[in-house]
Image 1 (cartoon, one colour):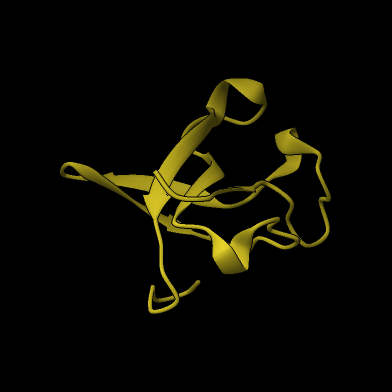
Image 2 (spheres, rainbow, N blue to C red):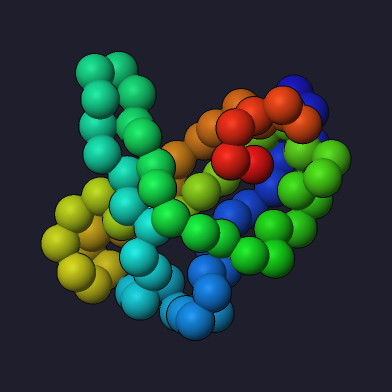
Length: 77
C-alpha cells in the first residue's frame, strides 16, 4: 500500500466536519463526489485518499469517509 492522504478541510468551513458541503452520491458500485477540499496533507505524493463527504442528512449522521485511488492524472485532483 502506498502513501495515504486525508481530505477533510473545505474553503469557508475549515475543519468543522458538520459544516462540510462536499457531497457523494452512489452510482452503482461507486460514489461520485463533488465539492472542494483544501490543505490535503500528503496530497502530492499519495496513492490513496480518504475523503470526508456528506452522503446523508445534515449533522454528524450524514458524514461518510470514502477511499479513492489517485494519481497525478486523476481528473479533479
